[in-house]
Length: 438
Image (cartoon, rainbow, N blue to C red):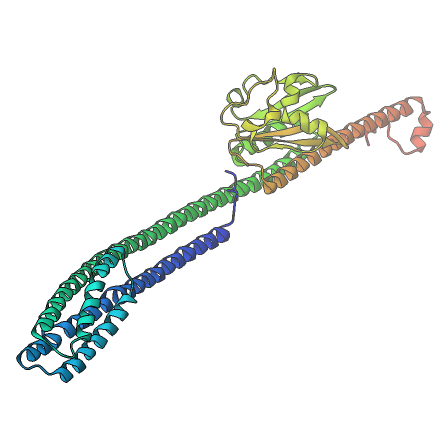
């Protein structure tokens, strides 16, 4: 299993934390915006609806039965020009001041249409009141009629203001509800996104943990394989002279160790003979993992161009493909196709006497199997095997040279005994029965 790529766990956690902070900040900003909107709506409702209603009530109170109405009744019973003049002016000033303040508030088109109807009536009422220095029954009747007409229109304005206040309140409630829904949605979205990201980070962490465990297990097995290889080399070195097939046995045992304890699915040793290559040892289901692969091939064959072992022998350095199925260099016309189950492959050159004599080829069933640590251990294993091959060859050459020297010495002593005089042999203290080997 290859180690997962991408940002580290720390980077991903920082990303989740940053996103969570951003979403919380957005939620806080939304709440602040909602508060501002609610405050603005409340202020607008007060300034544009409640204040105008209070001003219209002031006008209605001035023109109502308790002030102007009472004044008209008292003047009808007992006319008093001076008192009527002062009271009329006070009514005019109070109502005009309230009306002016009312006109300064926010107006809507329907409200302006009502004001256009009220304004002439008010002007006529104020004009009539200004002439009330000498109240007559006809003038008092006219003032009362105009007062009632203005009050009806003022009532319509108040009713309109109250209806608009109700509409504005409903709109404010809808806006507040929509904002609350948006805030709740944002909070839920924040929780969902953070939850998904946490799950993804945890899954990634678990994947990396499992990959790390698999990598540690693989390295542990490779260390065991390397240890067994060294033990095997020591045993084969002890049998170097007695076993004429020590190299072949060593190759076969190395392949078996790679498969049994090295996590490899197939392992083989390929040797070079002139321009030909031959697979002399193997372990694993070769008929399934390398179907159609020849045991012997030439340098010019299509299989040689696709063979990792051939590349390692020719190049003199290890050859690796951690994604064998997707590796276009391994797809050669005329060469066997890589079957399912082979995800990574590598080959490591073997040396003897300063020359490359072959390669150790390994197939694995996991993508990214040959990481730097695995390659280091496999290079060490190939180096130990190369050292053992040199030792076996040196021991065999020394044994042959020693055997030839002993044979030459035996023949020499035998020839000396035949040609030397008997008296010379006796004086030399040699027994006629002495063995040449002594």
